[in-house]
Image: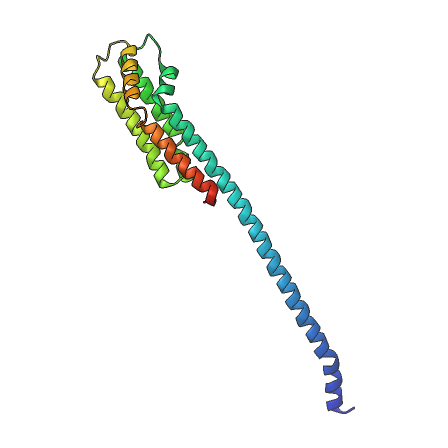
Length: 181
């Protein structure tokens, strides 16, 4: 047999096989790439849903924190008629600090603006309690500090740090829900 004929005979079978092999390779590759992209998109969507849920839970916890350290909510929880001004001051300070420490981990889920606002509210509430307590006799009945705090709250109803903080948190939650940040 002539070597040229033999080569042509081999090519007659190998070229179509190579074309089919290359076509199969390209089809399988395209399918695998699109399948991988689809799975990555699904994982990204699941991750985003989880992140959004965690963010919203963090905002909820911070709102609860702000509400719990509000003097109108805090005093009824810690006040005891047998307390002195010093006792009430310490009880309120410990409660505010404890609540803050319990919620510190939420800072990783919220913006710096919200976290700084929360920290500032905590400091402002502590400063108000301490400042008002210093104007009274430490051994006086706690009702005097209680009355002084309520008087300050009534005079500054709209400008309370807790109200401002709640508004900032609500605005950010609206943004998060609108844009999925």
